[in-house]
Length: 287
Image (tube, rainbow, N blue to C red):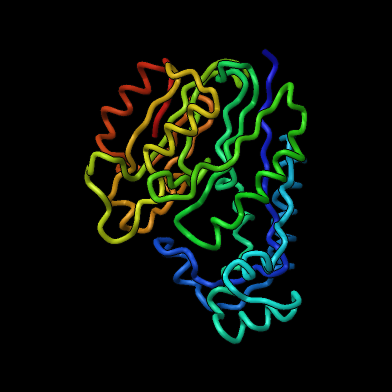
């Protein structure tokens, strides 16, 4: 099968600001209330995309979402014309206006989990939109993200876009930020590694910061994406690194083809996981 990898980046929107909205993200908290420059951020993003395109990589752009999210503010009880809704939120609950103005949809790793056609039972490329249910400013992105993906990947003969899982704690899903794929050529079947922070068994949990991804969510995403069950591995992120501010697995582990680049303490029972990966996918190189 002929296949290629395509990289998608998001653009910061006009209301990009450092609000420290993401509990557990220590970098976010550290930069809270600092002055932001949305225009410069957008230009930096475009330069990075152009550098990849010039190097021969296929590059796509995910547009920013409309912000402030006036519909969210209306849902939270603010009324009137759009400008009145924003003014009331600013006067009465500035933290809600901040959440409704977040440009965090720029982080495309949290948009959805993707299953390439080589891994899917029906031969289509699948996307399951992340519900991002752990944080208000991110949970409000899901419906627009779905519409964007449905617009970009509109050919239903080749693509399937699934709505986000129910937005409840048991199905907390952070998208591709907690997902890795390993394999040989892109057109050949590979192994998908789903990383979760907590499950229903009550296994060791982080104590300082919440674990955002659940095993139940990862398993549901695998089903929606029509992933061949023989090509799925589910592993727990080390709760101690979550407590050190590793809020998503992609902060500490990334993969491409036969390389898994990760910290030595990224996963629970990491030696056993590496042995399982090597058995499932001969030739995997880990570091």
